[in-house]
Amino acid sequence: MPLPPPHPSRRRVHTRRIEVEGYLRDDGLYDLEASLSDVKDQDFPISSGLRRAGDPVHLMRVRLTLDGEFNIVDAVACSDRVPYPGHCDTIGPAYRALIGLNLVRGFRRTVGEMFADVRGCTHLSELLLALPTAAIQTFASFRRDDEDTVGKPFQLDRCHALETSSEAVRRYYPKWYRAPHRED
Image (tube, rainbow, N blue to C red):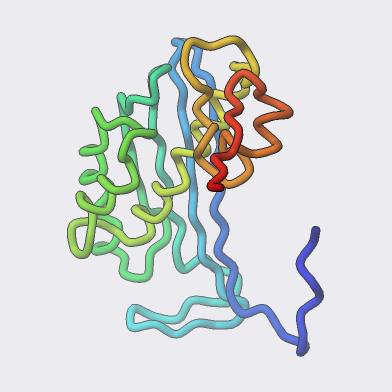
């Protein structure tokens, strides 16, 4: 269902784009490449100078290399366009500390702890938060979600639609369905 039409009329003044692409490498590892850009629709004066309409205020990129268990084996971050050149763009190497973390086990919390406040870049850290679910979608390209598995499929009980007592699970994952607990 689409969003309802806006009311009253309006004009766009800012666009943030986040894009994540997943790759299978020839060596069997996976790369996630993510970018974040902020663009204004009008000239934007900031302390470091004027940004013209359409020129990015921010353009940040991250690449994480993962093994088949979602472990981060390499991490690179860079800031191509920043509001304070020579300052904002120096934090990239700090994000190598992500190497060794697991992308689907406490990753978002750990990123918050590692790079909060002045220990990181707000925008790079925010971009990282989109990567766990993008990794799952990347891996899903090669794994059927209805195959017989020893354990419960990863996605079950991780959102309202796939709660194991839901109609969706009863229909699509009958092996894992559990009837809702009823209180009499």
